Every structure is written in structure tokens, then in C-alpha cells.
Image (cartoon, rainbow, N blue to C red):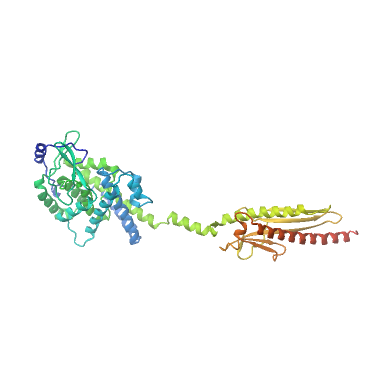
Length: 479
């Protein structure tokens, strides 16, 4: 019961095959058991639990993922366009640029998909109705919806295949039996029996046995009976999968999700039903519906979990302190400034005429204790606390020493006008505040002049204290 590049049939062959049509079975003759029913119950319970904790929006979104996957792959199964698991997931989740990826497959792939999606939505609307009932008029509307983007179909004639306008929402007017490459033929309902067979089909769907049956039995039967009739010129497989979804939606809120990569197994199950063994089709139907249930469940659970993008964005906001600068980046700015501070201080020291017996050192340090930062600032932590020691010494007989520690702190606030605090530990009132613009992309000329002036002031005061202490030493030793 597949459409695999059929060879053309002559009128005589078509008439002969008409006579071979084997009417679809009544539902009473359909299998009564669903294989691995415990798995169905388990998956359904998992969906119920996930749904209980989900918002209405998350539930709708999760169901939409399954619907979009079913709607996209239903066209791929019929060869209307190609897909793969990655593209199906992209379309189902509406990932970035999914439209372009679909357009790249064929020029009409997106239009076909949107028509098929509209048809699945029509099915969902039906089952959410208080008194849903499938009628011939509704089935014809479903066909019209699902083939809305398809202008023509291939007709097999005695002289070969021809493209003809597709009658939408109308039962077939010509035989649509097929002959495969192996010469085997399959008989669908003759044209003159289509109307009556469709009514018999819909009557079966209203029987008490069918209404009380498990949804996997309902969906598999509705699908098989419909394609056995093949009431439309084209699009019967797509309509069958959408129609069968009415029963899976009612019970599990998911469509009959047959994916393109399952095509061979799907057609094999239909072929087994053609041969009189419907159990593989029931099993296949239950299996793919369980997969759809699991997909919706996992999508719901994921929606309720922290989203990586959201957490990373929060991380970014937490770590950014000034504009687009993170704490780590500001620590790097502070470390680079310390190096520049040492450079400036060393240049000033080298320019001094330091007399014999006096030493002046400029020493960067990253360890050791550091004073508690003032309010609104913190220590530099990227490489440990950063500070600069200005060491002043005089040697015997005027032995003395004086060290001044210059601490560098990073602002904790977001105001880029206050980025670094440079503070003399001996005299906290001696400080500089540098802005981000002073420091980036490098220390500005005005800021460099300010730092140079600040260092000169500290050196003058440090040397002055050393001078006083050295004089005290000389006096104490009798010089």
C-alpha cells in the first residue's frame, strides 16, 4: 500500500484490478491487544506528571514541537521534499534560520509544510470540540487543507505519467491503483465504490467497539482503512496520518508521529496488514505514538529546567560591572595599571640624583596582607592583592629606612567614572581615582601626568621622613 514510483496501468489493467479490491476489514476483525501496553501507560503517566507542573504556554509549545515534526515529515515520507533528523528537529523547534534550511530543500517545501501543519491543526481543533465527529465533508476539507500548496499530481496513463491539476477536497474520478517495479499491483477502492466505502469506514469509527478501543488500535485501524480506500487522487497517505492523529490527540495530546527515517518500517507494517496481519501495524503505531509522548514529556521537562542561555545571560550580567567589562577584565586592567605605575615611579627614581648612601626602590608586589578596601572598592583578586612598595633606605652611619605601600583597588560599582582607587596605605587621604576612560585602551596622557605627580609627591614625603630618621640616627651615634 505504498506509492513507490508506480508504472502506468492500461485501462484494461485498471478495470481488472478494480475487481481485485479487497474491502478493508471491520473493526471487529482488527487486533484486540496493544503490544507492550505497560510502556504506553508508563509514558502517559510521565506526560501527565510533567504536564501537571507545566504552564499552559509550555504545554502548548511542547505539543507544537511534536505537531511540527509530524507535519514536516509527513510530506517527506511521500517524497515531496527531503529531510533528515537534524532538519526535522530544526523545523520542529523553530531553531534559528529554519525557514532558510527548508527553502534550501526545494522551492515549495515550506508552502507544503505549512499546508500540512494547518491540516494537523484542523485535526486538533476537531478533537477539542465538545462533540467531535468525523464526517465525509470534514475528511474532504482535511484533504483540501493538507494539499493546499500542491497544484498538480502525477497521473499514470497508458502513454506514461502526466502532471494534471489536483482535485482538492474531491474524491477520485479515475482509478488510482498502482503497479510497482516488480510488476505487483495493489487495488484500492474502485471509483464507483469510493463514496459508499467511505461511509462504511466512518460508520466503523462510530461503532461502540471502536469508540471503546485503545487509541493505538483506533489510530492504526483508521489509518489502514482509509488508505485501503485511497479516496483521493493524491495525498491519501498525508490525510491518513493526520486523520489517525485525531485518536492519539484525544488520548495523549500528541499526533501520529511517523518520521521520514521510519519510512521503511512504516511501509513494511502496512504491507503486513495488506497480507492479513495487522499486528505489526498496531505495534508500529503504538511505538511511534509512545515516542511522541516521550518527546512532549522531555520538551516539557526541559522547559521547566533552567535554560542554559538564560543562566549564561544572568552570569554575564552578574560578572559585568562597568559597561561590557567583567570583574576579571577589570582585574586585568588593574594589573596592567600596576605595571604602568611601577614604570612611572621607576622613571622618576632614575631621574633623581640619589646621593651615595641613599637607596630608592620601586617594588611591585602581589602577595602579603593588604589593608581593608574602602567602601565601594575591592582588592584585585585576579592575581592576588596588588600593591607597589616604595622603599627608601639610608646606610650607616645614617642608617634608616621607610617604606610606603601604595594599594590599588577596583570599584565594585557600575560607574565607569570610578574604576580604580590608588591609595597610600600610610596616609589614606593621599589617593587617586581613575576612570575607565583614563585606563582604556591605555593610560591616557592626562592620567599619566596625574599619576606622575602623585608618585613624585609620595617620593618627596617618603624621602623627607627618611631624611629625618637618618638625622636622628646620626645624632644618636655622635656624628
